[in-house]
Image (cartoon, helix red, strand yellow):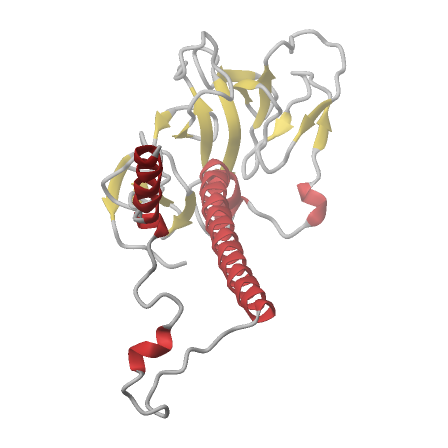
Length: 296
């Protein structure tokens, strides 16, 4: 019996010797660490109330939330600016030719209104600065039938939607020729220069002659280029193999100053690496590239 009691006592002593049961150094009697020091030199341990602790934690959390919110706002602003930047360059790239052809604008509001053409070849449209006439050939419409139609002609573009060719007539309204031997797509036509005492007059076109996107059709989805011809449509030739941003007549009217898309523009799909400008001579049908801009 005594051996069992002795074993129980030893087990109890062993449990009391576990690390979890041991007293920490000086335990709660921390004051004895400094018993040999003067009371005034002993460190004072400041205690905080539960309210102060909660208030401090609340402030830290609020500050962290505010910083996260500011970071999120900054990211949204950066994404928004980049999106606007991309949209701006895409928009200007697609609409630059229409918006920047200086000599095709007019200050008379009446002349910017479209006219309604009856579609009859016996009653073609007047060609500016000449005694000639012209008629746009429109996809799906038979101009040889003498049924009066209502075709809207924009005086700025001089053609109708889905124009596939141009027919030219002499002063007696007799057919001279078609502009294209095979129909294509003509986005706009322009006769100029329009300024007084500038000439000779030429016709400019934004037209597509080939199926550039290989969809089996030639329409407004294909790439158009700048072409030039005599007022009667004779001598049609391509001015440049490059897309253009704007153009204007210079000198006495025998040269055309052209601005190309900026080759340093990151959003320029053509990734051009040459000149920004070109000067086309209408007498020699030659294009000279330059990096020097010519003022009006």
